[in-house]
Length: 93
Image (cartoon, rainbow, N blue to C red; front, side, top):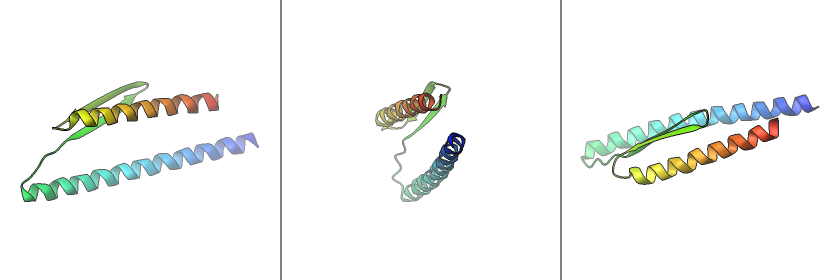
């Protein structure tokens, strides 16, 4: 019974991962379309950021006039991902 529960949990996490990837692509597409639309109107003010996590080392990059707010959001996101990783590691070991 324990093996079934573990494989069910892995399947749920895999489904969640695929859903997050799809949501990420949709967000990228929508934001690109919005920036292109704003560029047509002539009032462009673009800010952005990237969060990459190698193991337990988060690397955040931000640019634009709102980069300080973006870096705070990326920091919170990195901490949430790391805490979630610690919690999942403790429950599965």
